[in-house]
Every structure is written in C-alpha cells, then in structure tokens.
Length: 255
Ligand SMILES: Cc1cc2nc3c(=O)[nH]c(=O)nc-3n(C[C@H](O)[C@H](O)[C@H](O)COP(=O)(O)O)c2cc1C
Image 1 (cartoon, rainbow, N blue to C red):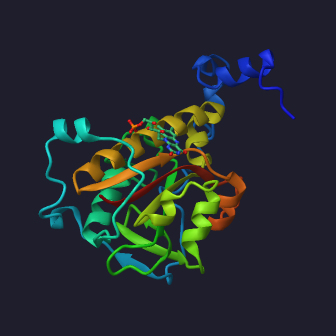
Image 2 (cartoon, helix red, strand yellow; image 1 turned 180 degrees about the horizontal axis):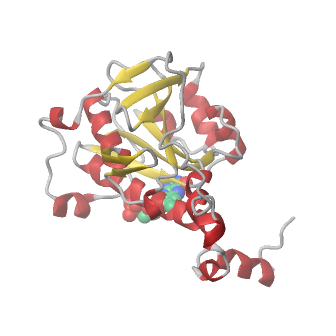
C-alpha cells in the first residue's frame, strides 16, 4: 500500500511535471541521435485487414461550421446523449479534428491537426463504436495516414464491457462512440528518452480539446475520462499494456 502523504514520493511525482530532466539526459545518446530509424507514424496492421473508407476533408460539406467563439463558449463536458446515431461523415470529421494528417514530411514525421512535442505523435486512436450510421458495433482503430478505420474485432455486450472498463461510469455505454487514446511511448522516447512521458500526456490534452470543440460543431457532446481500469481497458483493446497502453478516453454522442 502506497502512503500518498509520503513526502519523497510526492516530490518524485511532482518532478514528472517539471522539465528538470532535460538537464540530466544525455541527448547525444537518444535513439534518434544514435541514428536509429524512426518508428512508424502509425501502428502497423495486416494489409488484408478489413478497412473502412471515411469521407475526406473536402467532402465535409455542411458540418463543422460554427464560429470559434461559439464553440469555445459552449464547450462543456456532456454525459447524456440522444439515441440519434452519429453519421459516418461526422465521425470522420471528429477523427480528422483530433488526429488528421495534413502533410507527411518524411517516413518518420507528419503534420497533423493537433500539435505534438517534436512532431512525434505517440498516440493511437481506438474507437468503441456503438451507434454510427453504416458502421457495425465493434472496436476499430483510426489509420491517420490512410484516413480509414481499421476493423479490430467485435464482442458481445460491448456496451457493458466499456462501462466496466471505465469503472462503471455509464456514459460510454450510451454513447454513439467512445474514443480511446493509447500511447506507444517509444515513438516519443526515440527522440526524448525519459523526458518523453510528460509531453505524451500534454499531447493527449490537445487532442481531446479538439474533440470537445469539434463536437460542439456537429451538435454532439463529449466527456473526457482519465478514470478507468488500466488493465481492464488494455485487455478489452487486446493491447500489451507495456509497449502500448491506454492513456485517455472520451465518449461522444449527439445532443
Ligand atoms: C484530464 C481530465 C480527466 C477527466 N476525467 C473524467 C472522468 O473520468 N469522468 C468524468 O465524468 N469526467 C472527467 N473529466 C471531465 C471533468 O470532470 C470536467 O471537465 C470538469 O468537471 C469541468 O466541467 P466542464 O468540462 O463541463 O467545464 C475529466 C476532464 C479532464 C480534463
């Protein structure tokens, strides 16, 4: 049992938020500095896997049109949703807003709609789809380079399982879709070594804020979640929990 009042432990955890690490890391020895090739921009997948095309940016006709002042002013965490499904176009818009690629620079770097420390983008986006037009219930992964959804698998009672995985919080079970962001830390460690972890967490904040604002633009609501069963959700996603693990979630549904 950890004594949460332990002064040394508190000091250690606070250090995580500081940039003092930069002074002790030998940046000449990072994987990047040693000339190790950069890890792939997105988690590889079997080419024969089932993939779903998503409407492209220039096909977003009547969605996403709201002035920024209104979107920011109206933003709030929304935990109750109507039964109305999300359209495929709306889902595509949310994925573009949160992780969409604008320009591939080289095999290891791409500019996206969100910023990322060192342009490392060490996140993957999984979706627990429950109510999206034309997309069967299941677990999917966004492929930013292809702007496609990769079908991962489906399971019975996914709505119950996702609720269990977020410690009984009910809204993901009633949402159209839940975004589940995992991290592949090595993508950031390759450049920043042990200074990678704080910036991965900061990156996730930007992503989720874009989701909040994009939801306001399609009459949908979202609620961020950082309280979840780590091992439970990693098991649900069938990821290893070490080299890739869940970091943050947000459920989305129409108002
Ligand atoms: C990092 C982070 C983690 C959060 N985790 C949860 C959560 O697990 N469950 C939840 O219901 N809300 C969660 N929230 C939403 C906050 O409770 C909410 O943002 C806060 O109460 C302020 O309300 P507002 O977003 O409507 O302004 C989280 C928000 C953030 C930014």
